Length: 308
Image (cartoon, rainbow, N blue to C red; front, side, top):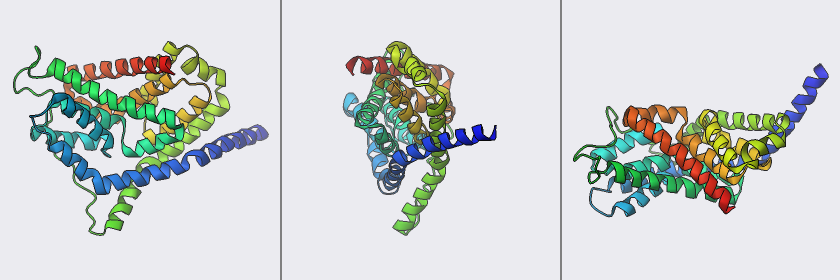
């Protein structure tokens, strides 16, 4: 029995060490870039969003808001108070929807992490997340805007209550210390999940046959996309933690469409994000959000499988 345990430990350690070697540098660079953006560019990014008032082109505003959401380094609990201040400043709900949706799905740090999956997957993730924000903004405009049949003048889609702008933690007068403190917070926030992700990936590679992964996520394209959308709901905890798992699945036969579906539903339905969103959406709009995320991820996954 001891020899069996020892052998399995060696196998798992081998898979763990190989994957750690493959993606550790991406994790480090991602944290560094994330901290640089957070410390030196966050206020400028949010300032651009804050200056988007009620006038101007709706579509251009939605596209710009989704782009700024991708660039924003904040997590959802940091994004919602910021969005509340945007709303109080007169930023339209469709622009807020685009910003919040793309901000949930992606940030500069996660973009660098995702480069470990290859350039094709990285581009798919950036484009689909960006489009998800744009489509969300357009749908809010069409179905809930003031000029829609359902919309009511002066009624906001989001209900921001008791949300004050988050306290800025990057206030150390020494620029280097300010950056290092932010970087250390990044390490503490993502490090454990990153290691857990690599460990789970090692378990998958050792104990889950490649044929099973291909059957679940690659063989039948429609079934694989649906499975990836479903699995993304309970499995996704931290963006960096899922990169090793995705890398292993892709190597074992996961289709690009299934990967795209997972990368949308995962962060969009992460439990901490859902808790925050439920507060500002209410039950009815919260259900609509769920339907939109699952529908968009499935359609996106199927289209990507058709293209590639």
